[in-house]
Amino acid sequence: MSVTGDGLRVELLEKPKGRLLQSGSPIPTEAGKEMIALLAGQLGDLLNDVLIEGHTDARPFSNRTDYSN
Image 1 (cartoon, rainbow, N blue to C red):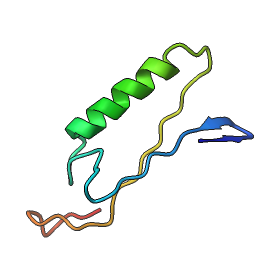
Image 2: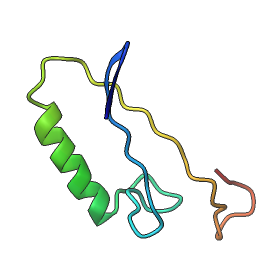
Image 3: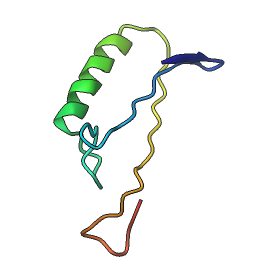
Image 4: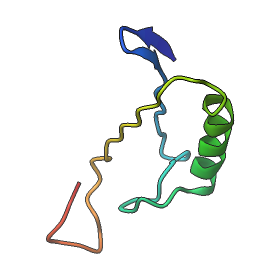
């Protein structure tokens, strides 16, 4: 977490054994669901607006040859 000119910034970084989303999918993993619930419980009490950004990983999809991250 850090405070920027735009407000509080919370960054979530993945590790190979701690993915927040299933590869190639917008569906959260169990760990991702837990993290979202924890954050929602804390951020939901704030009066400030919330902006969510996301970025893909760089791993190619094994089941698609015409699409990648």
